[in-house]
Length: 320
Image (spheres, rainbow, N blue to C red):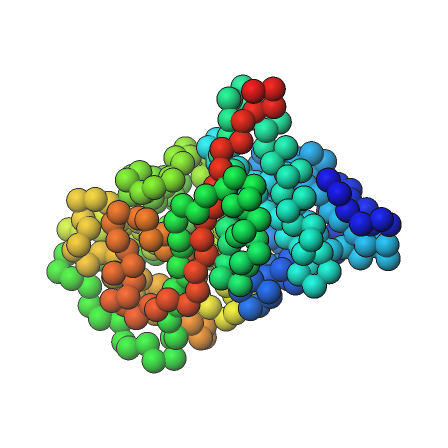
């Protein structure tokens, strides 16, 4: 890894969270127009499962000690793909992104060997302004595989919540009832098994990951059809700094799709967000999803706001 004379690349610690956050905010502002990460997100990244900052992350500082670049690997389930983040201050460290990527891919190769695998898949995202990053990824052997769209709607003009279709009811998740949490997880797990890239996690793993998603329990809902579980909606606090409610996952069991369950869950979530004074609502959608949820989302007033392309490549294990 080559960095300018007088600059330093070292392993970060939790003491570096404010410095890292400054880099992330600069990178986010360039990529999406506003800071999209907070200090808690940085801490979660450094302390996440299957992450060792002393091996899986780098922090680069200039001669004055100012942080200008940060890299980290993540893999919340410990199986499947490795997510590669290479974030730089675009005005000061754009030239470092490609060499930092090489170093991070070397670590992915080591992780593959440690797990006894012949290779691991590395994946990362590219926003519209990041044309140079897209070119660097292609030069490093990555291929664009699909696009995610961020969709939003204003809640200022939200109409009164209509009655759900006949037989459909929506209720809050009973977060203090383990059986209801297990039901929620079962709906989520079953509904997502026919979507691309889904990596199943058992209930205990799923529950352990919940703190990083934000647990605003009165914004999580379960839908039933004629008294039978049919769907679930999980909200996240990730867009509160934009005064928005955020739908992290919407799950409808295959037998109940195209029956108004998803729309009823979304409309209930929007109503709750609006009642709390939020000015907007949003979610992300994978355009490769065979259930074509984007059609549903547009029907409840969500519109395309921006896109992120996914790039990936296979990284052979060290020694292979």
